[in-house]
Image (cartoon, rainbow, N blue to C red; front, top):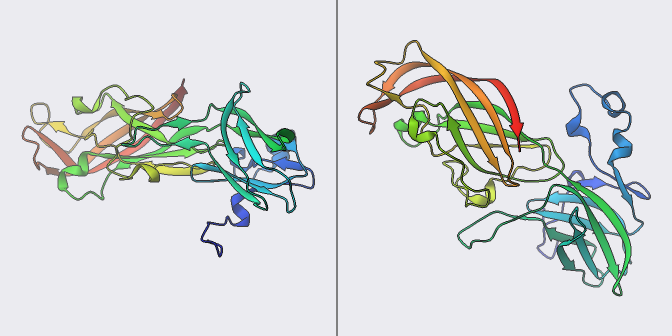
Length: 297
């Protein structure tokens, strides 16, 4: 939604709401179905109380930005965001009378070569007035990703894209992020089994097609379709799609340098799609089911 100046305004639900003196970060993503804060963790609400400031009304996230809503009549001229080590991470000036301020905390790699991602942990937002710190707010930025679903890609423009896999990733953490690359282990097609590219590489997927659409917000999901055709079968080893099964590992390289992994069972069926593959083929119906998930740094 845009205001009269053409700038985007956040809805009430977009913000992490503040109490009269405290910032309460959301803990809903940490709870199971039907659980309350107290049932999950009696200290969850207190842990979410990051800091107190009478100068701040709300803090939330929009795309690649932290959005800070200041109270009317404030005298803040600058916002500094300090990383978990206490070093300046990013900063922005605040115009007189401005109450909604944005600080960009991540930048997805592009052809321009730029890349930035916050260090996971507790950051300190310093509110500056007349060159001095008037107040601070602690903001927890900790993405927590897991692979939650894998299935055969069926929306391709070409028949041979039956060999691709959709990978859905959920972020139950407190900061936005993205998956920089996805590769496979022990897939039927050897070329799909390779090392991850660097986490600062430009992400390239069949879907989403553009880098700006690959973000995973806090408590959000994103589905990626890697270009690798992992479900290609060799005519030297197989003769059809019936009774064709196995396990495949999925590795997602995260923008902060960590990885998440999962293992899926695949069971092929349907018709053979030869396409442009020559000595390889795909199957028009492949069932994929997650059987194991873990993570590593």
